[in-house]
Length: 478
Image (cartoon, rainbow, N blue to C red):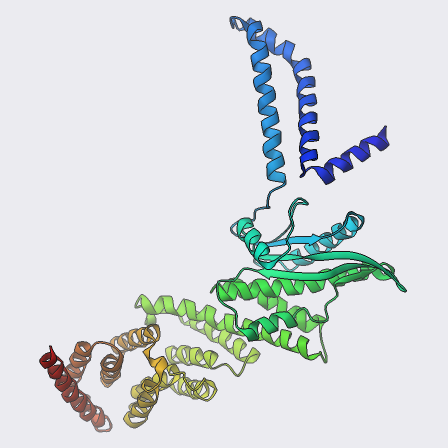
């Protein structure tokens, strides 16, 4: 009897999500309901009579049928939910495990799932990883299907493919004959990014040998876990969720350094370097997001110094990970300036200028401002000429940040009267001509008295004359 009961429960477990499982579930629900009704119904009827309910016996059959219908309906709803795509919470990083396999290797798949869940959860630092399986009635056979199912589930990554068992000279080998990992991301990926993601899968262990199955399962779970965590980090980074990306990429980078030391094959080197660069980029962009909040709320010079020091620490860490990215040095220059280290800011911007793409203009415009702040008209003018000649200087967001920075600096340092020229140059070339003229007039109405700054006054007169002449021509055309 016990043997048949176990077989019956195993059948229920395997077939519950299919039609025959639904029929068995409804039959079991009906039998249980009949048993409960038989045992409890008479007592309910007596209670109803004692409460003075008229025609209690006449209502017994309708209530019985209504109760049976409700019980069957609840069972049906349970069946529908059990066979549908699992859902992930809003605060979870959802990972869907959906291999396609034959019944004979189901236990090995179950063991892999347990190992993978343990591997993923062991790296949960300030985030919530959730690993779930796709029910047996559903499967993934293409990337488009994986994308649709992930969106429906509210997940981020799907691990899918075909798992098979083969016999060889070294015994039976069970694993993926084909594995795919699909992740949701908000941006179009470049070819180089796709190649790097593909490199992360080269040389990984996706099979279990029966002779070394305990070690192989752990290694297989570890390798899949590394790939999945990398894709989660990339997705978060592309989605501009830099703080969350750091919480994934930071531990991942440390794990790669610890588990894959020494000389590595070229694909593995590319993978490890990309994780390193992504972590560096996220560290800098996370500080940049905080900085922008202060900047656009006009609280630039109310940023607490300890916070600026933390930003500098993050950027220095980013530079130690990726010393060839100009972005890190551009941000470092800003934070050094806000700390009062003008020479350090200039040095950082010069480094950024050496590393930046030829089309980049932000470092030139930043250097022009710094030279203006120091009172060096010639160097400031040269950098404005170089920066404003580049197409990227027409980036409205970048110009908006620069203008906001200059305005707040003028208010903070009223003695630096030459800064009005920096504001006028940008407004004249990329902003409002009226604002530029007003700024130049304010500078000439209250000019700096220092002899070494007289060049700024002459430059302001020339720009004002040019601006008014250009304005008059515009009016004539109208």
